[in-house]
Length: 138
Image 1 (cartoon, rainbow, N blue to C red):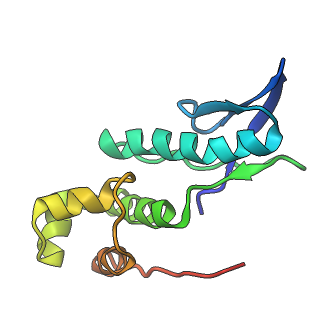
Image 2 (tube, rainbow, N blue to C red):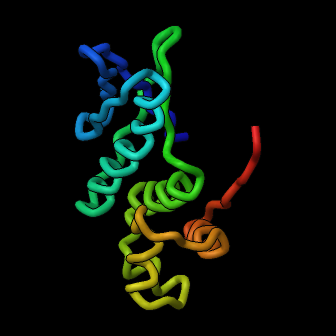
């Protein structure tokens, strides 16, 4: 759902990583593997700016043939899915808190990509939005 294409550009002794769909996400690594590893953190940080600013998440474009993609970690991806459902439905944090019977700080932590929320909390939030959390190992 959040597979973002990346552009890898050799730059001297490093490889620069940029995201055409998320211009705020830029990083580098000593080689392609390290650059792609760093790209996950850069992507998560950049997407957290959208959540913090209450802006819609940028939609990932279709990768070109052979183009690599990067996605947030599973936990962050689940949190972003809840946030995306909220923005699509026009549900504010206060409304989600009301639906869940939670206090606002609990919802704030749920949407904080740097906070290690529990999956059952994310699952409850998804249900409150009429969605379900699916976990699979591919």
